[in-house]
Image 1 (cartoon, rainbow, N blue to C red):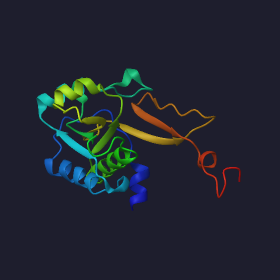
Image 2 (cartoon, rainbow, N blue to C red):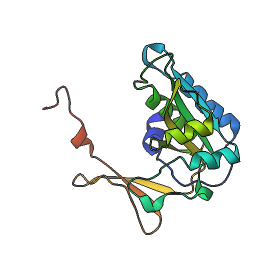
Image 3 (cartoon, one colour):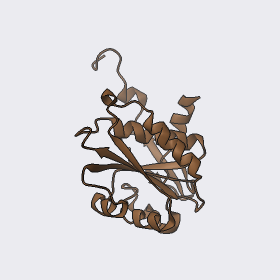
Image 4 (cartoon, rainbow, N blue to C red):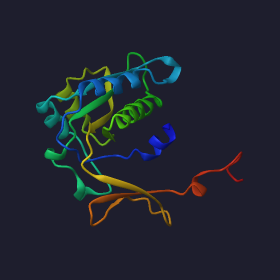
Length: 191
């Protein structure tokens, strides 16, 4: 069921050094291409990176695990593919929600294929523009890292508003999520 997959998918930051099949990455991008977008304008473009030398260059432009700076992956734990999501400003000046929808589509198709992902907004866009040779009329919005997970995460209910994820002594990342009663209202916010 899609519900079970959505609630099971976690962000991965450390990856096995095993190639991701090209067909799976293409299927991920195809899902993003066919996903809903504002006014059906389709302003997004994609760059897939899976070449070993390019992977190293892109890795240098990434920032990982803001709440666990000591947990950043090394180059030898990095993803084996990236999908850069770009906005064509000749089509639309703002991506609206399109980039988030595309990133989630990529991530869910990957997850369904046993591939882990991390949606990265903490990236050095100037460096990536040079590495990926992105023309000026395109904005780099997000980077989705893909690979086989080399870590484990668990979700738990946040207590007292503490939502910072943390690493336990066994190397498991704990991801606190706000309780439903804290975030959900029916019919009006004050109900």
